[in-house]
Length: 197
Image 1: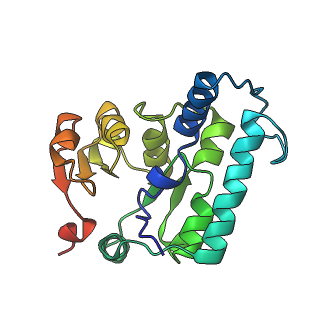
Image 2: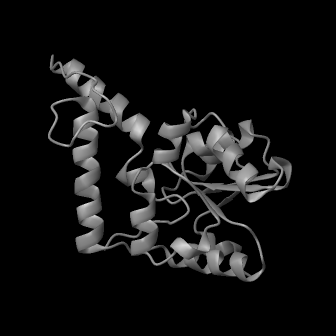
Image 3: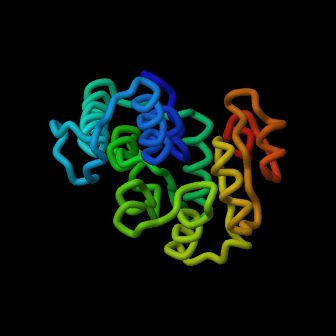
């Protein structure tokens, strides 16, 4: 099983907007033309939307068959925050968020989930725009200036800064601490377990 952070797991699995843009670039570079279709296309449709849904089905099957093993430090931090009465939201562009949280047995710990399904339904701008973090803060009832964003992606760190969040923590799992700081992280850790005390 691969370690996947429940606070930001989609980096390697699916970031819908980035994935579609990457797919379009690959098709263009190979002179492949595939109609855009829509997010509602069935998985067997030969469209970008259909291919995306086929990928989501495969990801969900892998999650179901193999499971996920969350980072231990992330789980400890989630437990500590919940024990201390903090409201917790998960923000991801992945449409597989619910399946991952269920597989990790962490779905009950999050008060709010802003995922790819909500992003599509509410036409929210993706990161580095702060929209997804702002709606999560609103739904847990906290002003952004009193909220904390924890991110391992540069675009997510930028989104936290763009949303004027009180604290933006970068997680440097790839040894990219300096880069996270340059993109606006107020604090950088290698593992969320460093925040548990």
